[in-house]
Image 1 (cartoon, rainbow, N blue to C red):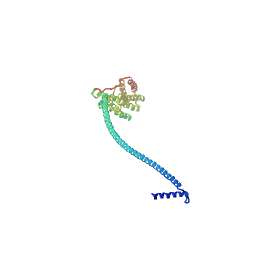
Image 2: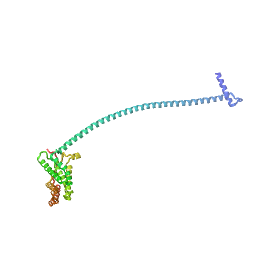
Image 3: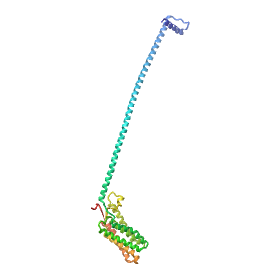
Image 4: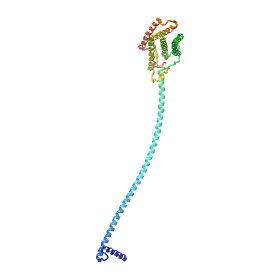
Length: 338
């Protein structure tokens, strides 16, 4: 202790010598005063140092606690985020699974609905077909009168060709054959059972119109019949044919399709020619027959032929008017014949 005190004394003397120099002499009292002041400054400095150290330590501890708190909060947030991510993943898998299941159920429903719709369409089509068959009479068209009418129609172009070639003998023979078929188909249809058809009511007058029109055109080409008379007769026949197609369309029940329209086995209407029309057809056949025979027997331009032409023109006009006035020229078939 003495040694330590002596060392402190030496230090103090050295300290004093810095202020007063080596030749400065101070008293003990002054020395003690200086020493006391220094001691107070050291204590004050030590207190300030300890005070600052304590504050920094407290701040450090506080910061450290805050850091731990933030770390704990972050760890907790991480755990929460991980749980949320896991829940979202599970929810997504459930949604995808539900969507797949719903899509499968919907596909099955669509499949069942599609089969039901197809079945319903087939059943509806069958019912419509049955109703159509109940409304429309389906008949056998392959009868002898119909075959004779078709034969007469097919013969007409060749008959016209023979007239163009001035083969009047052959043409006259073909006309006689056409007349015989015309008489036969009518007689068979009236007297044989099952030979009269609704189609024949259209086909027979059409065959007559085709034959007469062919003869008038070819004989007019050979200057044997006047052109105005031929134009009158052809115009009237074309109008009747158009009217027949219109009647077919009107009488055909829904649905009106091309296949059903041209299905000749479905009878939808029946023609009933007027009396004057039958008389006119006979006059026309008489005119073309006698005119065709005139080059063979040598009475071309005979006054009787000219008179017959005038009568034919008058009967044609009256016949056309009768179709416009009469209400019984055709009959629509609404129900199937029993």
